[in-house]
Amino acid sequence: MLRKIPEGERPRERLLLRGAEALSLTELLAICLGSGRKGQSVLSLAETLLSHFGDLTSLTRASVEALTEVKGIGKAKATQLKAAFALGVRVQRIGGEGKCLVASPQDAYRLIAPEIQKEKREVLALLMRDAKKHVFHHEIIAIGTLSEVMVHPREVFHQALHHRAFSLIIVHNHPSGDPTPSQADIDLTQLLMTAGNLLGIPLDDHIVVGAHSYISLWEKGDIKRAKY
Image (cartoon, rainbow, N blue to C red):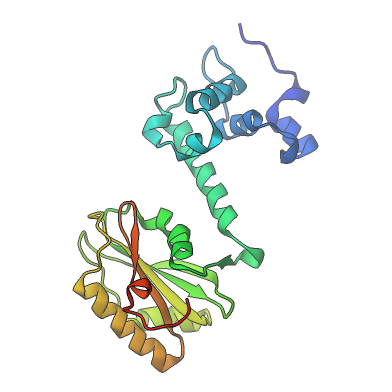
C-alpha cells in the first residue's frame, strides 16, 4: 500500500511555500511527471527515471522512445518531460532582455538547430541581429519540400526592416542529413548578399544544417566578411 505523502512534503506544495530552488532534482522531476503509476508514487517514479539513465544529462538527452522503456512512463509523460527539457535549454541560451549572443556559426547552429534539424521538409529560419551580435528575434519564414525551400529576398528583408535588424543570418535544414550546400543554396546566398548590401542590412551567414552537423557558408568563404 502506498504511503500517503503529507501535504507539506508534496513537491508542488513545497515549491509554492519555499520556491523551486529549495526542491531536490527528484522533486522537480516529479512535478514535471505530474503523477505516478499504480503501486508507485510520483516521487518513486522520478527516482526510478534518474536511476535508469544514471544522471540528468543522459536523461535530458533521452528520446521519447528511450523514456517510454521505463515502466510507468507512457508517451504522454515522455512528451511532458521532453517539452520541459527543451524549455530549459532555450532559456539557457537567452541572454539579457530576451537576446541571445550569436558570435559564431556554432552559436547560431546551437540556437536554431533543435527547431529545424528533424523536420521532414526543408525549412528556412531567419535570425536577426543587433549591432552587438545579439539575436533578438528569429522565426521560420519559409517551408519547402523534401529537397528544396524557396524564398524571395522581398520576404526576408520585409521582416528585417520591420524588426529593424542590423544584420541577418539564415539557416535551413537538409532532411537528407547531408549539410553540403547545393548550387541553389549558394545562389540564394549571393542574391541575399546583394540585396542586403543595397539595403544596408548585410547577410552575415547562411548555415545549412544536417543530421549531426552543419556547414557555414561564411566559414567556407562564400560570404566575404572579415568578422562574424
